[in-house]
Length: 535
Image (tube, rainbow, N blue to C red; front, side):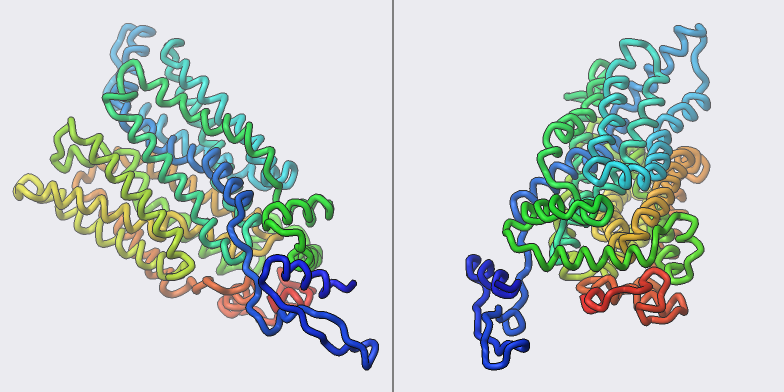
């Protein structure tokens, strides 16, 4: 029986399609059964249990750690700095100078994003050698080892272990922050790609909140408990190491790079929940043909390709804007911000956790509205909200000594900033990398975007304490200017990608890049099969 008959039979089992008799082209006078796919709406894959669990395990085991390690050193910072001072005194019989301690603590905080930068550079080689799932499993080494080292640092009386471990666990976060979106984007059907693309950011916010809750002074933010707080980062990695092997590798990786058609088909069948995956397999094969025509796109080649110039600039601007807008300044130094705003020292931990809860809630909202409102609107709304919050926060901090109710305005500004960042700047840029680049250039694009992300993160973590000392209440003016510039760029350059195929998105950018919008004449889309262009 022809493929149309098989597809119709499978569809009838799911109760979605009907079959009808169509005149045969090869044999006039004969009729063949064919599914009425042209007359009925196309089937949209649903969120199956296997896909849902693979998403949760990948995001919890990897993205969760990123968020956890962003906030884990916040609450116990006072006890950790005292440990640094005590250890230094035992070695030299001299107390460490205040400036040296500030620098040492800034390095401790900044080693995490610097490790993330190193991890971003490893993404391409790892995903090509081990696959998407294999890279995540290998990456757990960079979480479990530093978790043990940080947990033992106080007993060993070696604060250098903490600094080195923050670097290593940063490598873990740098790899996972790029590989998880890539893995989920290749597992998900097109109609779920936007929502699942936000899930990694959701687990980052959950990780931040959990670190804040464990960081209560009644729990682990104590003189004895902070090594446990730091060491708990290895638990999600251990769970992922145990559970993720039971879930499928990326079908695109299996078919395009491993040339294992049988394994790719089985992976798709498990992910979709039905046997007939022929159409999706054909789409991947045709994309493979296009990729072979385009060839491998390295980082250096990506910088030289005119057909991808504005896509590349856009990713650099969005990733830099995401971090330089001040979000990690708020998370790394949230306690100090609230104290400077006039919040009682005993209540700071609860306000910080409340902010983390708002962040989680708004990211959940984004999961559901990203396909409704679109990427561009969320980015504009998010950065504009952050811009407004930074301006008002600056005014509130400057006037808090003269106006009694200004500290409350400062707290509201921080919360509104978190809401704005959770709507667009946090989750959307990584999603856009998947959507505006093809498979051949996507690993290189993730490496560049990830490098910009982590270098910007590192810069903020290293210099913000000194900016805060030098500028005081006016520190957030710098972030406000960056938010303004990023908002203007998005308004002028970034198109809406919701509901568009990658061909349509590339054609929009082709006009900006001043290259032909005919697919066959574009560098990355050379010799693209006609079926792909009709996607």
